[in-house]
Image (cartoon, rainbow, N blue to C red; front, side):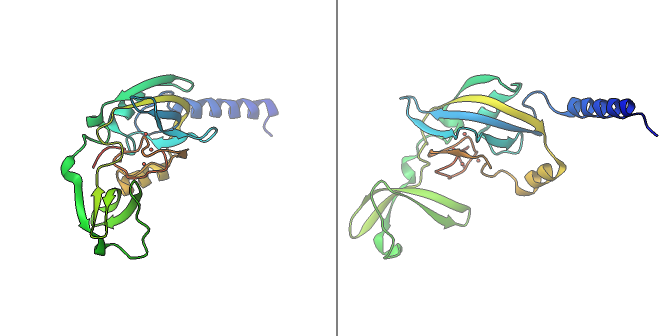
Length: 211
């Protein structure tokens, strides 16, 4: 029969061993939870995580803007940092040629189009979000630029938790490739995600890289 103290000591040793395997800093293949607020040059908040619901992402999976992810490397739990990302490294520069006039008849009659409204449509390359900038009875002017294109972004981040990714999480990331992040942030036109058109969450979707 094992002595109770010996069993407790063995359990404590195992816990320390497992803890030693967990990453202590933001690094490749680490699962990270991050609270963040994203602002524009004029101070406008374009996206932020909800209180108590940090954005969770796998480092190296391509779900964050690369320049943002690079700025997070080496941070520890509790660390805070302000990271600035230039437009060219975020959603790209504004492209005037991406503004196009489309015949009104190509839209469903029951679609309530409004100037300034944002709408999601399916395309061969996946869902895209466009902004209506002008319209009349004959045509609709659509802006295919991401709403944050041409804008420098500032992220105020706090690392909440770091752990090693599970085999399933790593396999899922490999199978999906670069996608929008699974974070739970809120209230933004863009998130730390890379290349995403997600307009209401933190995310290649609220902290994404241009396509």
